[in-house]
Image 1: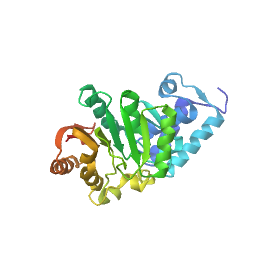
Image 2: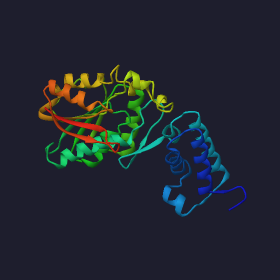
Image 3: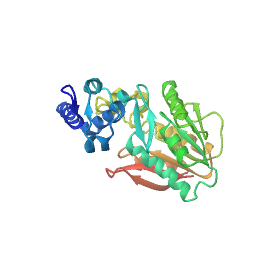
Image 4: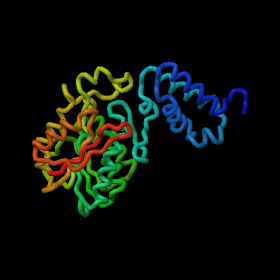
Length: 284
């Protein structure tokens, strides 16, 4: 190691300390992301091999940390996020996929394993954003045919980039305000719609507020998109079809109530690691 080089662990600790001083809670995870994407040093290599880091890579990390301290999300800085074991391209203008949304993919794959979706299921995803949900499902359900919609032109471009990145042939991307013009008898509709209420929008962390407003805000009570989805979902589902939705904290009960009023029944609810009802699966 030359005098200008630092060990990976030494640099990692310095970066974490600086970010923690500024109140960034997930400093370790974010610095690990910087090391992996920007420096090409994954977590195992970082702590097992402790390779030296030259001045060029040190500067890259310093620049990333400085950007993060200005409030820019770590995933926007690196340009990538991992979701369901896959890499997705992200950037300004598209919602960053969250780990809890992986539960939604789990539920869809679970329904297929149970035989509830039949052979060669037709699936519709609403509000696709990066395309992470549709593409993750498509990666594991090779026999499924998936249509994914998005209203934002910027977000749709990211979805197209990710579709190309993963080379999947069983996903069709469409620009639409929720439902596509063409109605089909889908076996399943899946969505992680905007669901942050007016009150909760004021409480979001600064880096979350850097994400697109329209991908977060769900109306005064956070339930506007669920109302819109439930008002039309029956027209796009086959008899006994499924609707799988991600919901925010405290929203499962009102969403289920609205769904029952729209002719759906609760199939099951799934909690996230914090014990919050995060996914509701409904059946027509």
